[in-house]
Image (cartoon, rainbow, N blue to C red; front, side):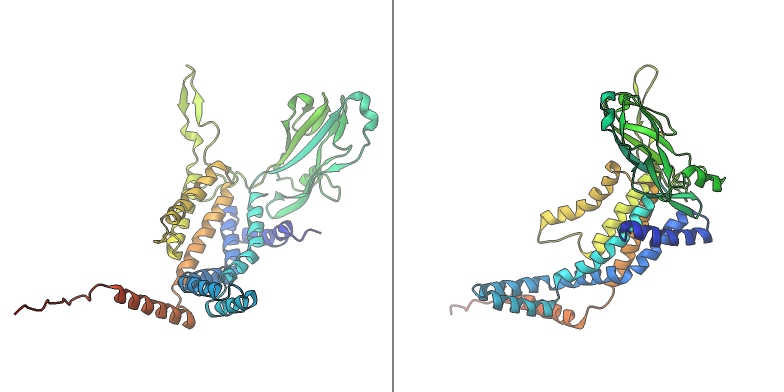
Length: 396
């Protein structure tokens, strides 16, 4: 039994999604509600990471100074160095402590991401690799059922079922052999029979050839005829029932990419013309919003600038641009972008609230001591005190 990402998606995310869709029949609102519920549930973990990061930023200069002193003092005594480092971590805190809460929440966030990339918001694809052998090698082919990994498919609103693709005679065929690719449940019930139980369902699954088109003949319903020896890759697609539904300014929750392939079209005279319809403003708005919220979050957390390291400053300033631009080259469904935008806004508000909290007493005292020490050091290194001047003695 799968207790990983698929388990969390099917047994945690989807029931929450169905619950909210049952209250307000809008898949867009269901995405927003699901995102907020998961983020609120993970609030204590992510808050711990933010607090630790804030404290480490304050005590890091003092901590580095202590570590350097310990390394010099105990350079020939590993045991003593380890004990001294333990005392430092006890006094200042462990820099790695903030990573543990982050690691704990990652499986849940991955499951949420996977849920929104699948049915009902996006089309679900199944890939099948088929090997076609010459007719004289037909005796080498032993019929053996071939199945893909099962995936969750929404048949209608609130009703979903685990479905896999199957080749009854296996994925090794002889030239001239015919077979049918089908969709069915792990228990063996055909997808057609499932659709018959829900007359309003409009799934209309279809098959295409991704590689080796010249070696096979395949119709959309999955009837396959082997023509030439070689390797073939087939893809079966089951549409997401909400992939063409909109929300607010979003045209289609299942649409993938901000720019279509037909950005430039060919006019009757052979010239290239710019196609404005190939640009999806709804997706661009979400990508831009994601980048802006990421930048604000950096500013709030103090990661936007590091005065002592100009190169790091440049990297930090470029990070929102890089992450946002990435969605242009590695496009995601609009529903996933909606989740990422809402989650990032939530994270920014959370960071703002936590940074307004008072620092722990021990961290505050350490910061005050460091500030006083710096002020004293600066005074001692000044060539003269402000507001005072030295007079030369008169010569008589």
